[in-house]
Length: 203
Image 1 (spheres, rainbow, N blue to C red):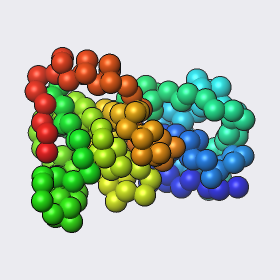
Image 2 (image 1 turned 135 degrees about the horizontal axis):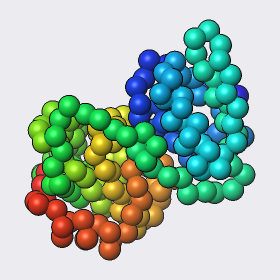
Image 3 (image 1 turned 180 degrees about the vertical axis):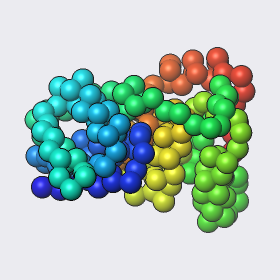
């Protein structure tokens, strides 16, 4: 059985890792999450219970082993932050960063990809942090499991930033099953968010 090693990680990272494993189609039957953080253990257990997912927890060598049985059918999983409130030393604003391409700017795609990587990796350094990042068109490719920015988006999500992925775009590029972080959404929700925020930043 596959092990998800979340030892040394603080909430909500272990919970995000658990949710990602539950969505991973290469894990057919179940897996075990290892955590040495009592708060994370409690939050993972509550998350699994609230989503009607079977599990057993044992303690061994100052570490909890949470053995999780994957649901037999597709299920809609709730967001981790609902079960693990995020705290951060930085303020967050209601402004939105809207990424509409995997490249930044026009001209050289190679340069544009490099610039976009630098841009996304710098978001966590600004203050206030954005309240939401919206990905559409080829921007959705930045949040897939084979993207070099996958871990960065998971970190941004752990800071309390909502990551919204255009569902139509994810379907178009056939990557919906490969989105590792964020909520698959629709154009109505995206337009509503853009209409009600204080400002929108386009890289």
